[in-house]
Image (cartoon, rainbow, N blue to C red):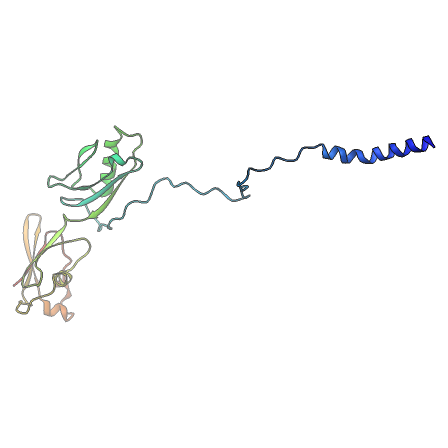
Length: 220
């Protein structure tokens, strides 16, 4: 009887051994509360290297900076060097640290390179952006019998007829057949005739010149 009881106890201990061993293994460490596990196969969001440039205008083809133009110069991570500037009559702009820089006659990209070169004396690997805010150096003029005579900025391609419309149109007693466009070409003044009546009737459209900076329209 005793032998039978001992055999039964050994059998029960043998069956219980795997369960006891499993319960002895510590549970896996749980993730901290509020922390979501990273999704598999999903790359982390890219880091923005440079912030978007401030809004400006799109300069016309062949544009070079001139006096009275308004620019925004931004140095990435260098707010002390960044500023809105107006090109002075001597063609220069002034910025903190780099002081006076010749800007007139340069494209915005050429000015950017020049600014980065000057700023490299004070900042490691400077990254500059030049944005054109206003173009005031490129002007055309209209005078005489129009509603709003005066200078107008030449921001993009503009014809004689378009400038007349921008100036409010011709007055009642304007001589529509003998309008003149004056242009300085390499130091020599040229004149071109413009017949408003013909052009408005789709005749001799070659009179409707594309204006250049400095042109003057005279409406008698």
